[in-house]
Image 1 (tube, rainbow, N blue to C red):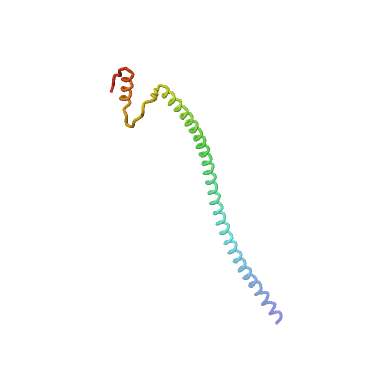
Image 2 (cartoon, rainbow, N blue to C red):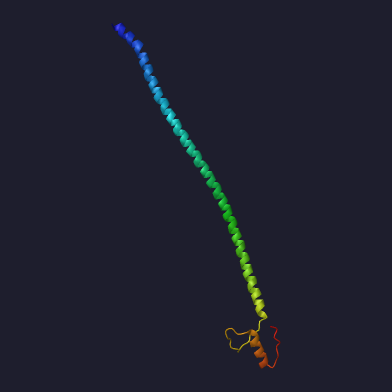
Length: 132
């Protein structure tokens, strides 16, 4: 009987062990498969983030370059405006050098300059030809 039990154990135990090992290997394979899927997902997300970062970096470089260019253009325009304002002031001053200021004649709204000049000339004993 003892020998029979040993024979049964010898015959059955390897099969049971094999079944247990197969079940464990299947579980391990399933776990590895899930881990591989997770790693692939993380890898894909990492690639997406890396691409986004690369695009953002390029955009930032472009914007910095554009900003620098715009600042330079602004400085140039400010210099040109300053020069133009100075030139305008000089031209305005030059134009006023030819003006005649008549002191002591009251100013009236909507008066005609030619009429005022004609009256002044008459009072001074001079004649002015009207061109208008």
